[in-house]
Image 1: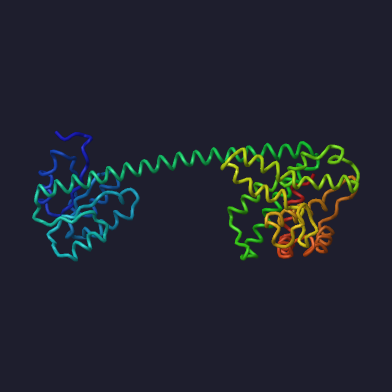
Image 2: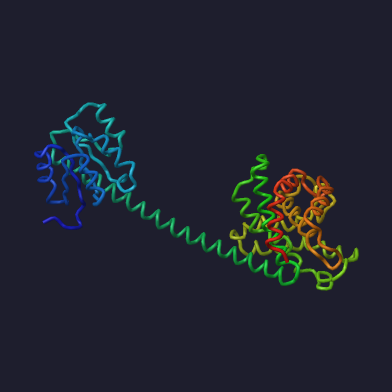
Length: 360
C-alpha cells in the first residue's frame, strides 16, 4: 500500500488506456491522481496540491502546451515540475514544450525505467528547490524582524533626543511638530517642481524623521541664555549660535556608539549643523553658501525661520502669515535658496494650515 507521505503525481491524458498504464507503473511508489482532460486537471489542482505532473500534449479542448502555460502563470502551481509525455517526437515539439514551461519531454511509447528515473530526478530537484525557497523565506522573515528591531531602536533614539530638546526649551514642543511638517511639505513640493534635485521618497522620509533634531544642541546652552526672557546680548548670542556645532557633535557621538546602526543619523547631523547657514554665506557655523549648504539644511532654514516669525517671543510679537512671507521674500537669495523659497510660497496654504493645526 502506498504511503500517505509518498509524492503525489497527476497524470493527464485523454486516452483511458494511457492513464491505466501510468497508474499501474506508478501506484506502488506514488499517490497517483488521474485526469482525462486539461480542464479537469486544472480544476483538480484548484483543490489539491501535487508534486509532479505527467502531461499529454494532444488533447481536445485544451492541449498540453496551454495547460502548462496556465500552470506557470499561477503562484500555486508554477513550481510544479511538468513532464510532457507525447507521441510527438520532432525537435520543434520538444522546443515548444520547454518554452511553455515544461521540465522534461518524454516520447511515447514509454520506457518504464526511463520514466521512473526521470520522475525520481525531477522530484529530487523539486525537494531541493522547495528547501531553498523555505530557507529564503525564513531568512527574509529573520531579516524583516531584524530591520524592525533596528527601526524601533532608531525611533526610540530619536524620541529620547527630541524629548531632551523639548525638556530644556519650553518653546520647542509645537515648534518641533510644525517645522517637521513644514520640511516634509516643502521637500515634497521640491520633488515635484525641481526634478534636477533628484529627491527620492526615502530621502524625504528620512529628512522628516530627523528634522526634529535640528536644535538638539540647545541642550548644551546654559539656562540663563536659553531661557532668557529678553533679547540676547552679542556675547550671549555667540553662545547660542554654538548649538549648531554642539548638536552635530552630540549626534556624531551617538552615531559612533551605535556603529553601523547609527548611519541614519547622518541626515540628522547634516540638518543640525547646517540649518543656520545662509545662501549668501553669512550664516553659521561654517559660512557655507549656495548649494554647498546641504539640501536638508536649506529646507530646514525655511521651516525654522517661518516658524520663528510666526511665533511670539518675550522680545517680539508673532507676525501674521502674510507679513511673515513678506519678510522672508526680502531674504530670498540671501538667507534662502531661491528655488526652494519658490516651492515654499507655492504651498503657502498648506503651510498656514499646519501652522494653525499645531498652534502653541
